[in-house]
Length: 234
Image 1 (tube, rainbow, N blue to C red):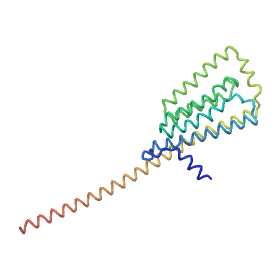
Image 2 (tube, rainbow, N blue to C red; image 1 turned 60 degrees about the horizontal axis):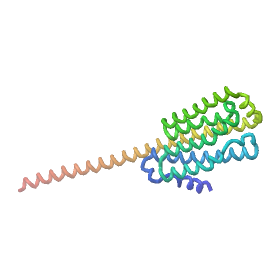
Image 3 (cartoon, one colour; image 1 turned 90 degrees about the horizontal axis):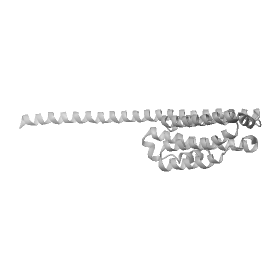
Image 4 (spheres, rainbow, N blue to C red; image 1 turned 30 degrees about the vertical axis):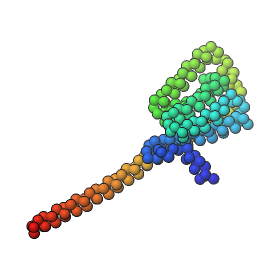
């Protein structure tokens, strides 16, 4: 079962990238990240449905739609940067509406939103990371002015949230954040290992070529010596 699942997951990794370990492992880690987030969204949606009804405002449907679509685009167009940014966009689409309906600055969903620039920085590049950080700051600025106008509204929104809700939320947050970092770290280690193997293979080829060149030079010297001996008898 596990083998078949891994084979299915790896089927989304473009085979054309295997010649370049850096691109191949970056793409492979993005595929893992898609499935990791999809599982996380399913778990959070089920918890919300059966236990944490106070968090019903989170639109998990965006995750069920955009994550498979992003995975399809990654396999078809082989562009990790676009796919990484689409994952972050999905994260924003899920959490930003929820933040404004679950307490604003007092909402734990704002903490979850901070994962977005981290994912962008690790999987889509530094430039994307800073752009999405700007997006998070923009949301915070808007919330600041809304709180100035009616802070009591947002305080009233969190009255239905119980300690067990926050415990569940923060535990899941820690698991998801650690999972994202682990996937990235695993990809980095695998990339370095693949590059070292490629380097060792190239070194072996160079040694083999050098050995052949030495043999050719030795053969050439032998031919030259033979020619000199023949000239003496001519």
